[in-house]
Amino acid sequence: MVQKNKLQYIILGLLSEHELTGYDIAKAFTADIGEFWNANHSQIYPLLKRLETAGLITHQLSITGEKLEKKVYSLTAAGQAQLQEWLHEPTTELTASKDEFILKLYFIQDAHDPSLQPMLTEQLLLHQAKLVHLQKQMTRKFADKASQLANYGHYLILQHAIDREQGYADWLTATLKNVD
Amino acid sequence: MVQKNKLQYIILGLLSEHELTGYDIAKAFTADIGEFWNANHSQIYPLLKRLETAGLITHQLSITGEKLEKKVYSLTAAGQAQLQEWLHEPTTELTASKDEFILKLYFIQDAHDPSLQPMLTEQLLLHQAKLVHLQKQMTRKFADKASQLANYGHYLILQHAIDREQGYADWLTATLKNVD
DNA sequence: GGGGTCATGTAATGTGTTACATGATTAG
DNA sequence: CTAATCATGTAACACATTACATGACCCC
Image 1 (tube, chains in turn purple, cyan, blue, yellow):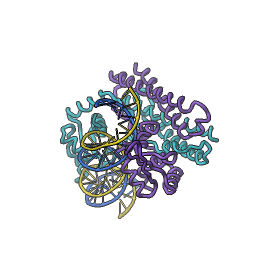
Image 2: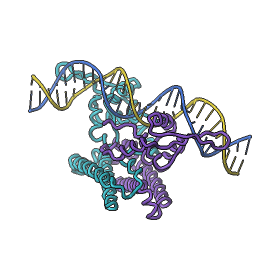
Image 3: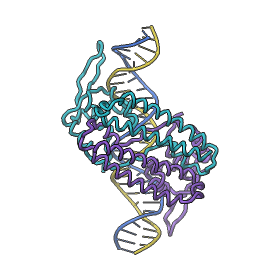
């Protein structure tokens, strides 16, 4: 019942696609997954060890150049089963997104507060920049129908991220009009 | 840059409106603020002590009934200053929202996965229910223009929450159509 | 040979959740 | 009189971030 440690499922999920090193997994969070989850290598390396002890993953050493050792991890059958179990379990929690800007806004009582306009403008620029970044990713990764279907989940969440940023920007724009 | 304790600002912000007990503050997270941040009383009580030691808030005892003691906290001038500083500081981080459903979706490669349809439907019901809840709050709290202006920040973020849920639901609906 | 990246780890600290613990008041 | 809520706290644990630490490889 106690649904915990989601990072482990992300690791299992990533390994279900490709063999990866801890370093590769950490990088994934600066790329696409970073849109929906964050993790640092200091969290990942210990967890990889725990998952291996639990029999969900294994690794084999690989040498790059003369002596640089890499641990290339892959899923075991037990790990694959664990991943599938998580995927097919109901998802009933709607986690509150911790948005600092929204928090600040909440405490601005006065509709004519002079800081409102610059604050909203600052956020609008941030979200517009993110939107452009996401749209570039979309055209780069999913230009044709075939690539969309080949990695459908990824395509869907990228579309969702774009919609979300567009919605955020629209709300900011509409609010700015009322503030002027 | 040091990651700052944001909960402290929420407490300062809440106290800038009214005097409150720790219990009241905890309750605020099950109400409107819960949409954007979470905190339990076990986190709040120790922080209240820390904030008081730091001179940002004070409390006075109040007795309910025969002997039930309440600590009613209020902002000091230093606390008010700290709150204003935070409010007027730029907000440049766009925190990744940790959405477990999106995470699961990411790992579903196959566009024809049979679990896709029930998963999307489950989420749609959740987000539609939340949307209805938020819309009720909106009509209950901000029916007239005067109440909107009296608590403008609150009005804005409630509108944003509604837009967000509507956008989420729209995306799910559109995705379901493609999955059928 | 130097800067950026690849690669792996631990330590210290900070934040968040669940459980433990107690007792008073109020509304039905 | 009893269940729900009011009210406050601590302890243990889980999760997350930043800093510390080391060394190899690759391209210029």
